[in-house]
Amino acid sequence: MSARSNPILPGATLGVLGSGQLGRMFAIAARRLGYRVHVLSPDDDTPTGQVADVEVKAPYDDLDQVAAFARNVSVVTFEFENVPAATTEACERFAPVRPAGSVLHTTQHRLREKSFLRSIGLPTTPFHAVHTLEELVRALDTIRAPAVLKTAAWGYDGKGQAKILHPDDAPRAWDSLKTDEAILEGFVDFESELSVVAARGLNGDFVSYGPIGNTHANHILDVSVCPAGLPPKLNEEAIVMARAVLEALDVVGVLCVEFFLTRDGRLLINELAPRPHNSGHLTIDACVSCQFEQLVRAVCGLPLGSPRQHSPAAMANLLGDVWQHGAPRWDAALAMSDVKLHLYGKQAPRPGRKMGHLTALGESADGAVQTAVEARDRLSRVP
Ligand code: AMP
Image (cartoon, rainbow, N blue to C red):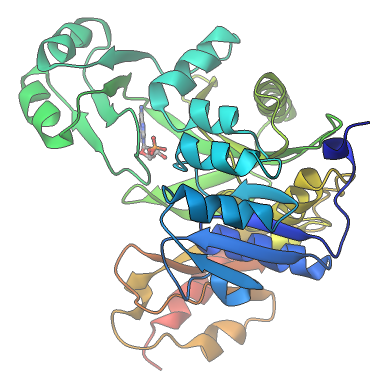
């Protein structure tokens, strides 16, 4: 048995690259299990840094600082997919990186990601690579409008995307992206959006949550609910696909598969996120082991926990917009006893910025959604 397959036991130090809310909730789960946490990112007083043992402020491409960081931890993980390859390679010299840099390589680039999914026989939105305006015009002969043009890399929450309703929109869409590598996707007139959050251990064990039902507002996740109320066959299909993805990528950690459910009942994969996911936040309050604890267990080579959900649950995101009429009325939301509040410790509540979330537990999924949305409404209601 190599040293790298020995379990990393409580008391050891875990390293996380990236310092947002996902890192924060990972660090909280790790500390609950008795680990120490070091975080590296270009910022300080961050959501993760506030709850970590050590916060290192350094750019991801400062490879000396990155190497020094990795030397002090037993394993390195990350909370966002745009970590440069050189950074994970610098870490890998001193500590295992889980999931591996190869998983990031595939998932941080939409063309590589979709080509990978196609290569293992999984259904995706129809797509075409685009490097010039001429290519875009030609691609629109195959992928007919309406379509979405997206930058191949660095996109999130609808950023770096332009909708094309008519072929005449091509020049405007191409200019707006300011890139030389894009992907044209057919616009899916979906029935709903779903996600499966899954974890895979060092020994190949697999657990999953969901499918979780997701609704977006302005391209940003708004409300998630689980169970999503799908027929059992679709639930099963989504989980089988998620498992195929984690196994083909040899993921050790957590990965989320986002799906579109088409109006004729087919599941198409929209994208992959090689980390805990916003839609999985409800697992903190609704499941035996949450997505963040699974990540701790997986990267430490420990057995995974039970993902069993003990009651229907819904999550409503709290964006900076909630602050627009003054301080939110936390007491009014917390007066609803089935509601749990999670705030990420961010100072500036800018519109569209994820500041926290509310999870509501209920007798039914619909009831949980109503409670979560009502609690959020109460935050900005004048007494
Ligand atoms: P993405 O960053 O690719 O996940 O896109 C953000 C959101 O935009 C998705 O969750 C969808 O609501 C919408 N969207 C993205 N791509 C498509 C597509 N090909 N068809 C329809 N809606 C899309």
